[in-house]
Image (cartoon, rainbow, N blue to C red; front, side):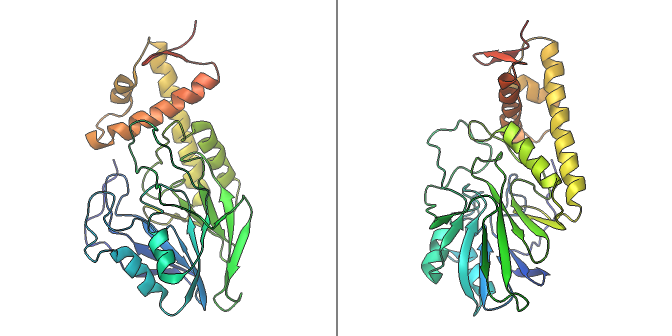
Length: 307
């Protein structure tokens, strides 16, 4: 487990990261969100966009938003006199998209970006559940662009980059003018992403990591944790880590039939008990991928290597 840095955190404050990008931290720290969800404001002129508006009201970890909808108020304060022309979400987990609706109500800006996705029953979750309030005005396809303002005068262009895996509807957004990529939960600056079946898909996640590795982005801005200034190095390491986990699973099954809790105990030594569920979901995602390849089989809760 990566240690969360000591307080104070810049919750509610607009931090300038580069000329066209500011960041506002939401009040929802937890073992799964690090210091909280990071909302990004793109643009420095008369028109701006918001990426991942975050939770509405109370944070995912139960931390009260004492101003009622204080994170939305913090976003509006950071926007100031500029016109909000787009509210974009990378995906629809409840620490990312619920504030889109009140932000739209306050500004009239359309909700644009990922497709809606709500699963009624997707098994025991280790991360935030899906947001049933998300209703986009426009869904972006891979490679589709939106823009605002005047280029050279604080204007911007954002391009959707489809990155399924963490969720099937996950999008990243490329800021064309600066080479920055907003990665949501696909690539985070402090931890690996939870891949939780049935919607979370390990094969799709690995393919999306390869897609990012093949790009030439200058910096990654995740929704949790610090910016990543060596994108390819981090993504290469993440792919290697997942391959190592797969190899661990195959070795354990080579010793005989296994159930996931026992595998987690052997694979994740010293794991914070609060993260055992997340580890189990990612192990399951690897097993499902191996099952599709015909390399493992299951009988109930027991997994084995076929004869």
